[in-house]
Image (cartoon, rainbow, N blue to C red):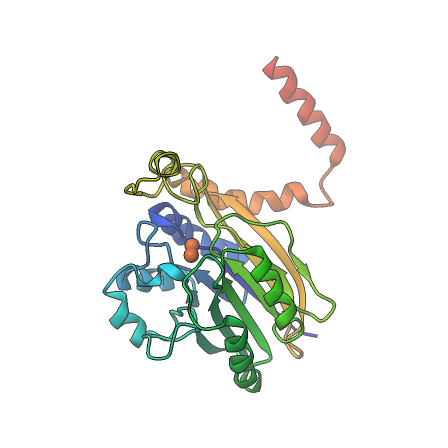
Amino acid sequence: MSVFTILFIADICGKAGRQATAHLTIPLKEKYAADYVIANVENSAGGFGVTPEMSQKIFTYGVDLQTSGNHIWDRVDILEYIAQEPRLLRPDNYPHGVPGSGVFVDHVDGVKIGVLNLMGRTYMADIDCPFKKASRQLAAMSEQAKIIFVDFHAEATSEKQAMMYHLNGKVSALIGTHTHVPTADEKVTSRGTAYISDAGMTGPYDSVIGMEVGPSLGRFMTGMPKRFTTAKNDVKIAGVIVRVETETGRAISIERYQFGFDIEDAEGSRDAIFKRDKSESPDADSENDNDNDIAEKASEA
Ligand SMILES: [Fe+2]
Ligand SMILES: [Fe+2]
């Protein structure tokens, strides 16, 4: 059995998110021995959309394919770019005639992977039905690729879970995005579909879903519109690793990851990704670890 490993980077939010992606994508790819990297880029440009220049740069960080969501149209110059760049997806269930596409089939060392980007409709724009669109697209995609990865960009966990049952056994992975808050419900179904309601965010976690607290809190307290800027502190890169059986397209595992990033110590952030392996290793000498704990406590006292 051969295994195909997908590294998914959750919604990249603002400059902090872009910097974390720039510095940590390759180390994460190495750590998890990933074959393919998918990133949701809908909030890359100050939290609102992505510019063509940013999208091009994000590819150079080691990302193979970019997905998006409701914010994809926030930058006007993306319209022309998305029509020409098939590796930047927008939700596929936007009405016919909208620029770009929500589907891409890629080839990696003889393995084909199909990626589908969809958007929910609960508390979101009332676009075409994502469930019917998924059925139609998967009929065509499954002819081309065994491995199928779906980024379902949606607000309601109920809609995401319903989609999981709709696509159960028909896709390798159904990964929720958009809320920027990672959920703890990752699983592989008995039919071989990896699922999580939301993969989280790559960006500043000391924030209201990536934005500075003041204006966001102010909007909730007054009901008045406020100008939002992306926050800066407690930056993390987050998402999931999905391992798929190459021959069948069945998921084997899904694992959440989340690592801190400090632009002042990018090298240290990179090293921490690998250091965690050591401390988690079953070979680690637990007696010595306990000794160290006691020594540290003694020195703090
Ligand atoms: Fe987002
Ligand atoms: Fe979104």
